[in-house]
Image (tube, rainbow, N blue to C red; front, side, top):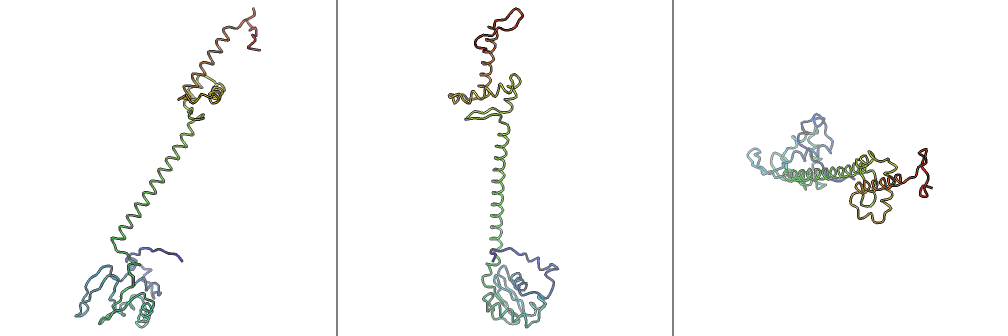
Length: 231
C-alpha cells in the first residue's frame, strides 16, 4: 500500500470530470473533504447561527444528493457508514446536516504549513540541484584537466601545450626518452616543473651530442672515423 499524500485543489470541482454523475463512494468522500471549511466561520441557517469549525460542513442531505447525483436516502446511508468507520462525526442541527471530518488535518494541512513545506521542498530541490551541478562541474573540470595532460608521474606533470612547445625543437621520441629518465631519477621530488626540467635535460643532452660531434676525427673524404664511444 502506498503512503503519503497529495494536495487537491478545490478547482477540480469545476472540472467536467467532476461533474460526471453519479459519484462513486470514493469521489463522494473526496468531495466531503473539499467542501469542509478550511477555517472557522459562522453561518446563518434560518434563524440559527452556527459556528462551523475547520474540517466541518453544514451541507444538507439534499445538497449532497444533488452534488453526487444520488438519492437522498443513499446519502444518509453513506454518512452513517462513514460515521461507523470513525471517518466523520455528526452533530445535532436543525434544517441541515452538521458533520465533522475526523483528523481533518491528516487530509488537508493548513495553508501556511503547506506553503512552508512547499518552500522547504523547493529549497531542498534547489540545494540538491546546485550540489549536483557543482559535482558535475568538478568532474568536467577534472576530465578537462586530464585531457590537457601529456605526461604525469608523482607530483610532476607536463601539459599538452608544454609538450607542443618542446616539440618545436625536439622530436617526440627525444621528449619521451627524457621524460622516462626524469621519472626514473630518484631525486625527481626536488623538481617543481616537469616542463622546465625536461627542457633543461634536453638542452644538456643536446650539448653533449654537439661536444662529441666536435671531437670526431674525419678521414680525407670527410667520413667520420669511429671512436671507442661510438662502437
